[in-house]
Image (cartoon, rainbow, N blue to C red; front, side):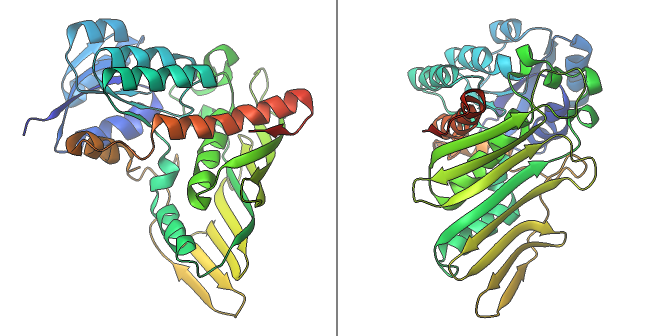
Length: 339
């Protein structure tokens, strides 16, 4: 069968390190075009992977007929680009957070539905092998009911990751809308919803800029979540974990505790109250330093090939975004926000 023609909007770090190489490695994909306002970046991708370069996504859509698009741009552009691509009849994989507001996210979902295309959000935490294993173990019932949890994601900040370093859009509120919460927190709100097969009912958020100089976006947050089932826990996101960043989740259950990503080499540890301990070596999680395939691209391509709606849909992305937006509302009002 003919290959899926893919274009990439935005040729920064996430596109260079994840989206583009993973598309290139997929035998069902042909990369046909790249857009970036810094045309040299788009050109460099075209030189490496084939296809054409454009300095604007509008121009790209006008000149190319593509089946699918990855949106890898600053957060404030996610909605307009996704809507434009959907209106051009392309399936869209958008980076997280899918949008800056719930209204934008709803417009994106609507555009995809109206045009009969898929919208998928790059919440790769669901697809990481340790998380897949953890969900399988949890769903087996061996730990009984989950009672409390903590989930956290932290690293030293985008300056070491973004192609623009300290000058990155990540640090500018008008482009990023939110800082560590949009970058890392939304991954964890998505993951905990998925892992517990539960929705967040209430959020209390403490969000601030503690250490990153000269930026107006948050670099740290700690949130308390109450799930619909009554389970309570914490979610933290940090850009100031300068040593020993964290991407771990611990669940305390009726019959024991499950630790995910707490010990290198033993990605999932189950310690039961009856004294049994199981460790599962199931492969590492992707980090900024160690890029392992995220699974997101292959999953998106598979959805298109098999005409199966993506499990990490726009609707799912919106639910995960709403948790983060509620945390900001809680910080602003000093109240607990009900979802």
